[in-house]
Image (cartoon, rainbow, N blue to C red; front, top):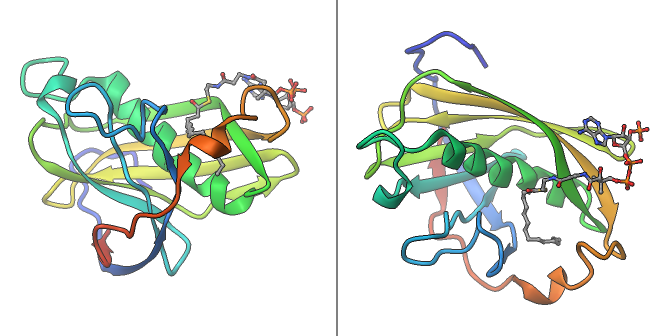
Length: 176
Ligand SMILES: CCCCCCCCCCCCCCCC(=O)SCCNC(=O)CCNC(=O)[C@H](O)C(C)(C)COP(=O)(O)OP(=O)(O)OC[C@H]1O[C@@H](n2cnc3c(N)ncnc32)[C@H](O)[C@@H]1OP(=O)(O)O
């Protein structure tokens, strides 16, 4: 994905085939009225993880714009979704993430955040993604590096119980 500013993505409709499980205790997936980001991650038939998301007023930094740290959270969550597809027997933690903020993201609008199919090398998973504004401008790009951790690790041993699995995706297609 280009690092140039004001580039519009060439988009097409992708079919949603499932949803990544989510956890009530995770800041990224928790959908509380204010504090949580509340992302729901769709899986597409061609191997992307993607979400449509309405940016929250309470997540602003500069007035009217989403805080950069919150945007980093969008990517940490959506890119992490690829690790669930690739390593369902494990859980993966972020060890590095690089973000390019190309255009400011307004609060109170629907954006799309997309994770491309990932590259795996042993325990290392590398994922790239991008954020689209409503007019298809590529506003942010990101690259992250995850390391798989066995589910017996004390960090993750209780998480399966807290994951939700049941919901149907809220939409059948997503354009990106
Ligand atoms: C469906 C199931 C769900 C279940 C669960 C649900 C939970 C509900 C949803 C949660 C969704 C969360 C989505 C957001 C994800 C986060 O926010 S994660 C939080 C931020 N990240 C961290 O705190 C990670 C900190 N790092 C660590 O704790 C440890 O490095 C790890 C990842 C546990 C690995 O430790 P370790 O197993 O002892 O392995 P270690 O030998 O240290 O390193 C392994 C490899 O990683 C490399 N490495 C480690 N750190 C780095 C680094 N910073 N840079 C580059 N390489 C590194 C090492 O060099 C080594 O490489 P190799 O020699 O194998 O080539």
